[in-house]
Amino acid sequence: MLLAIDAGNTNLVFALVEDGVIRARWRIATDPRRTADQYAVWLHQLLQLEGHSRDAVSAVIIGTVVPRALHNLEVLATKYFGVDPLIAGRGAAEWGIQLDVAEPKSVGADRALNAIAAHAIHEGDLIVIDFGTATTFDVVDPNGAYKGGIIAPGINLSLDALVTAAAKLPRIAIEAPSSNLAVIGRTTEDQMLSGIYWGYVAMIEGLVDRMKGEISRPVTVVATGGLATLFDQHTEIFDAIEPDLTIQGLSLLYKRAQSPS
View 1 (cartoon, helix red, strand yellow):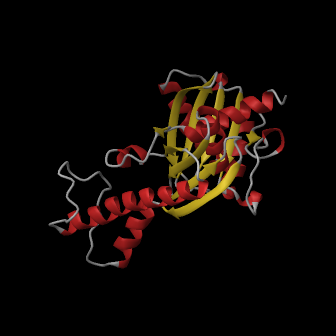
View 2 (cartoon, helix red, strand yellow):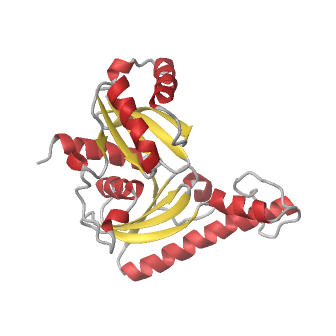
């Protein structure tokens, strides 16, 4: 089986993939100081809990936007799984899509992987929204080329900034507003939730509307990331939600590397 590793700014996701199907997935907070030995102990226990052995892993592919985390993940693959990992965007695992932007090398691995997976699943022009540490909006054309996009602060970053800068504001959990859909809050907590949640809905809808205007063709909007379903409750802007888009991109990239033709 393939061990696909998506190293993001906030979390690392490890997934076991067999024939393109995700059999198990685990998440851990990103910490560049975490050693290969620490990853191995943690993963070994989780593999056992899911009924898998370490020997079941025959290949590893890594996609990362955290350069400092890469070395220990490479050591994990070679020392504990006995394989040389593929690195997304390098060597045999080159993207295989056109990065049609001013600075192709600056495109994050997660965004390229999302573009690859979204194009494989959906036809035509696409806008891919990823709710991660940052909220990114990426445009993919009908040929699968990455055409650029938008980077906005993630919702948790926005909330952290608000709480940090305003001494009397409490920390609240991000959740969908109650079913009455009231925007005007009656308590401090309700007002904060309204500002964060409805502010994000307005941003998403507004930016997608402007992006569609620039594309000037029918567009499919694909959402991914843990918070996609949260916003899907109160907006009609998403055409599809693909929770494992980045892992799917890694799986596709690995498959291409095995069959370059």
